[in-house]
Every structure is written in structure tokens, then in C-alpha cells.
Image (cartoon, rainbow, N blue to C red; front, side):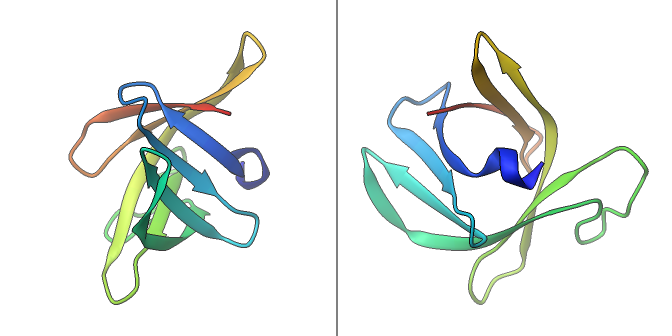
Length: 101
């Protein structure tokens, strides 16, 4: 899963927002093609914080400097019409969908 997530992903709900996952473990956020100040380390894990391994959830775990972990569930990572699609459920329970560029 980690090798497939590397790259730039465009938000389906906000064309001005994209995220980049680098091969060296960083997640970068861009708004209107401008790098935002928050650069996080990211990990793909079966547990995150109080969410323990239940046998089926996979978490995108982000660690911002000096802050606690951010845990998002990777709902799906699939190919449709020759494009990678990533769906996440964020900590607020909202579904986010991204298309790999």
C-alpha cells in the first residue's frame, strides 16, 4: 500500500487542494499550488493511537512536529479508468476522495 500511495493526490471535492506523499515518508499539503507550512511524517499501520489492530482497518497515520498523531482510515485504494483513487475517513468521520495525478 505504501508504494502505491507515493505521489500527488488531488482532492475530488476541492480542486485547489492536493496532498503529496513522498518516498522518504513525508506528507505535504498544497492549496492553490502553494506548499502549506504543515509538513508531516506519515506511516501506514494497522493501529493508531487508541485504535488497535482489529484485523481489517488500515490507518494513514500522520505526525506533525510537536503534536499528537492524526489517524485516518484508508477505506480504499483502487484503480478506475486507469487512475488511482484513494478514499479516507478522517478523524471527524468525513469521507475524503483523492485522484492520483
